[in-house]
Every structure is written in C-alpha cells, then in structure tokens.
Length: 94
Image 1 (cartoon, rainbow, N blue to C red):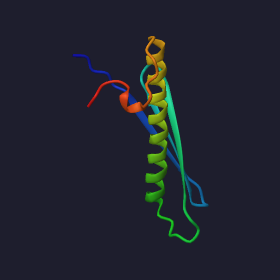
Image 2: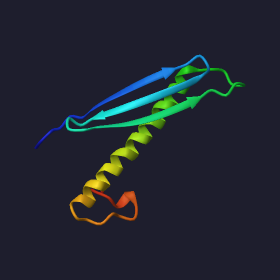
Image 3: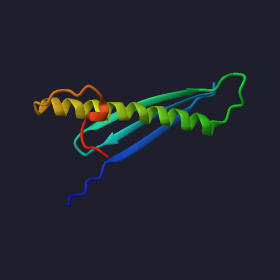
Image 4: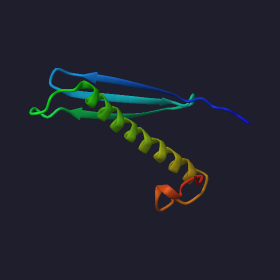
C-alpha cells in the first residue's frame, strides 16, 4: 500500500467594508492548484466575521474542487479516453 500526502493551505483576508476573500492552495508535491472565493456582508446585516470566513472558504474550496476535477479530466483525455458526459461518471465509483 502506498500513502501520499497532499497539503492544503487556506488564507483568509477581511477588509473594513465587510468583504472576506479566501484563497486555498492544494500542493500535490508535483503541482499546485488554487481556488478563490469571496463573501460580502450586506450593509443591513450584522457583520459576523466567522460567517464571511465560512462562505469565502467554502466558495474557494468549491473552485478548487472544480480545478482538480478539470485536471483529472484532462489527464483522462491525455490517456486516450474520451471525456465523460458528466463528472459523476469519471473515475472510481463510491
């Protein structure tokens, strides 16, 4: 059995106007993929930084997941396989 470790770093930034930005970086040891997300506090709402962090981080991770799936699809095509019609059909089943 082989174990591989990938490292993920999440950076959160909040400005004085209630905007939170997140950047997540996946380091596989051979490549890095990134995702970014933002969250904005509506002026009428109470600014709760933790909620902005959660939203921005979740959106950044969603963007990263898309990047990772896109990379896998490119790799599959590079092996001569055809691109599947939906992401759910790619790779191993659960």
